[in-house]
Image (cartoon, rainbow over all chains, first blue to last red):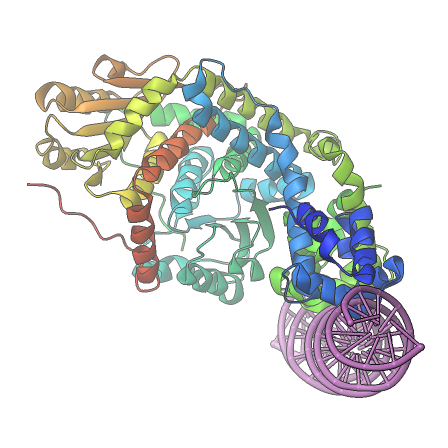
Length: 289
Length: 289
DNA sequence: CGCAAAATGAAATTTTTTTTCCATATTGGC
DNA sequence: GCCAATATGGAAAAAAAATTTCATTTTGCG
């Protein structure tokens, strides 16, 4: 499996000059693989064609192909040593699935926080806290539910907060009421939906709204139009990506924005509580204008 | 000192397109720095000259110079991976709000996992994976959105999954179709809503459905009627409770249940992807009977 | 609203890197 | 020691990448 082991195993079959190249490679593995062909050639005192022949013997189609593999290995090694400090076996073997997933999710959360700039986060919260701006929320198929989570909380904190309906025919009514001061909070994760981009484009270009985008590290196409982009780490090594990092950021926003005028928020929550027995339905703000 | 911190600190002074490039860089730091200029340009959706201008603002004499610095950082970090993940102090004091909240949320997740019995979790997943049973989901005001999150995922995994509408008048149609074999997944957290209890009571007593309850440590009144109760830790010392523990369990359920018949799930997801361009709307299963 | 200044990216240019070709060198068998 | 097979690297060609130029777009301001 490992590229390094692969080289070591085959080093006996190589020709003299190829072995020189392989040795240089191993001497500073894996970083020698990041050098250019000419640099590695100089370092190993083997000509570039020799290195190319070596690389092809190792099963790569070219130097670029080889370099991509090296980068992949560096990436892997860079991330993996962390899932070591496990809390496994606290109550027996059968829990390891849950605790493994938990540790991986924790890692994703930590990475999300560590790649989020505090300054940018503050700027975003300030935008959202600004009562003069209307806030519009939307999201992709799955993240829509988390957008809705944020929506329902923001509703308790301030007015002029709107959830864009999922049904596309309803969009114009919202889009046409957006202005330059307004904010669109969009959540868009892998398998980006084309109509989300269309929506964002119109909101940003035609209406001049500011877009705050929550996305993954592959960056949704909406990032073209967004004023702020917050990349969230979603990988936990399972077939489904995790959203705990996103939820963490959402809850951080809720806390930060409500701090801003806690008294008003408390009053709203109390008023809400009074109503909660009579009806589960939200009292909708009218759209402005 | 650190290149990453350097970028973060200056991100405010950058122009819009430069910020896009910087965000892409940070989203997959430090590996995005190993890409070629053209690749990074594509990924960040900023033109190459823009990236070059960014790189020069950061104090490098060219893209190559910058890449050498990135490689240097990777090399350094490679041998001490832990330093990188010491989230606090990594980018200064102003981030402490986010990282404090993150650590508190992590604690809540860990506690949730450590108080969840693996056996019970498995039993719940088995119930949900059983294709013969219909699954009905519901939740309180805020947790309803997370119930919806689970709903949309379960929909991709199996059939006969239904989301109870929030509007009370619609409930009878669902309640009357529930049978003894069926499962209600209820999420109910502090400030329990009385009508949720009414719903659960009817589902359990009159219809004989099995209730799986996600709640907080104060235990929703629904626990009287539930076959399984999973208490989630929600306290993070802020005015708002956290839901990361709940989301973790939900995602664990999704992973576990989809494992059960991954081939079928994959096919469903692919079929879904085919449709995703034509309409954002779900194709609703008919209610049974 | 219009204008100047700043920002941006398309495309041309330059530089670097990879790949190919082939002449020369080396090796091992006889 | 000679020959054929194999290995090697110099250098040209091809490809790719980085950089520069400059026209167009966007932004901020009066």
